[in-house]
Length: 321
Image (tube, rainbow, N blue to C red):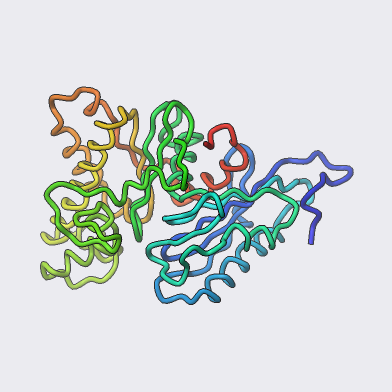
């Protein structure tokens, strides 16, 4: 195993962080430099999911972290590990309880990773904060001072940067916009709420709603293809999800006076129409110019955003509350 704690003799060192992204369908890790660039050959992923056991999840994390560590170049120094995890999390004790990964409740993920990469700091935050840091650093929110980042995928996560810093949060769950309730919707949510944004607009729940209307597909990819083909149920499903996202963004901006809402995640790419519907819903707040000035933008970081944001926990500590 390479020495991760000291520069290599004879080389000009470059600082790298291991970025870990734990979500409802996969865990991924990669090396990311201090400019926010992901080293492609260092990127590894394994499945997670609602049926995975705790032992399977532990092994998946070990696999990706150790494979990424093995890719550390000889001219680099590892300066830390940043972890972005689906919420809720416990930032004080480094635990995770992802709603869509039921085998882990108050699981000590930070301790697991620390044991794999001794001698460097390990920083854990909710995945929504990580995507927001990434967009603020090098993405769609670059230059914005007040930013909401949103992940629309298996679930819906979020995070906030206000005044160029991640908002302080005693448990680490601040900005978790997936579980605010949206007017006009009554979809039940596993968190106990009704009409939560995640229950309405996540990929699986949007597909589930479409199936109640006669849609025969089973995945977000199926829905995207049907939408592109003009299927009326798929069109309605994407409009429904986009409207909910826009209402959530408008409510958040009413509260926080946001410059940008940057949205990433796999399901956010179902169709550009998702963003059109979201912007239309936000534009309905006609009396509040400070709300309608808010820009809703797709992530500028493709699927690398969560990893870049996890690395920002290490490379850009001044942004992290």
